[in-house]
Image 1 (cartoon, rainbow, N blue to C red):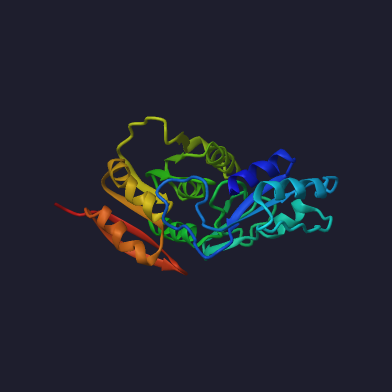
Image 2 (image 1 turned 30 degrees about the vertical axis):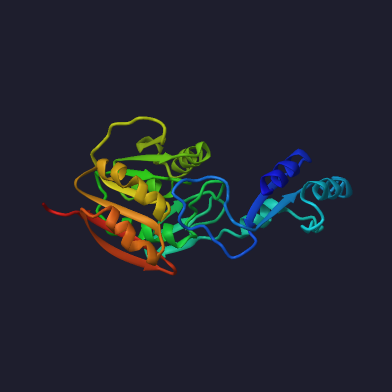
Length: 278
């Protein structure tokens, strides 16, 4: 039903359509991305003021029936681009590392300031899982290293690694928009010369990365265990994030050949490890 409403709003000319959980059933452990699977969903459409609200409401009622509520709210006219920008402020990861949107002045010019534009791809530095990965990266000596960022989103981790001294980074994602965002953010940080982007559907044969990163979800990490392990060089470092504390044991079992150190922030953990000797 939610799919039908989603499509109907787009047909009626919605500027944007979003779907959120209307109950209490968050999906934290989905192995593959896809349409939301919440039992109850709220579908929201944003329209130009000239839209015929009555006609749209009548159409939606005909699709979903009288038992489901259609709510119409009038939004005050404002500069939405400026409003959106005010939501993204510089984020302090450590004394020496900040994440800044392009329109903000870096708070500390002596620190390493990652310039990341918020967009459609995940990863602006606001989420604890991203912050955990950045913290773990900052602890490593990256000079001369090669890095694989699987599920790159905005490319923040690949860009960070290059800014910290990595020689080469490969960013992989399912979503073409993520690969575009990654390239753009690499240009903003002047490290695009060291970046390669690839879809998960593209074959590539580099099996010797010094560092492999995956900030996704527990189910996906478990299903990708053989792939991530195959691309890590002997003695390399594996960093996994997007894991809830209750899921950490299952993730470690999927990577049983690794000795992991766990780092927690808020309700999330990241795992950093090397392959066990023998």
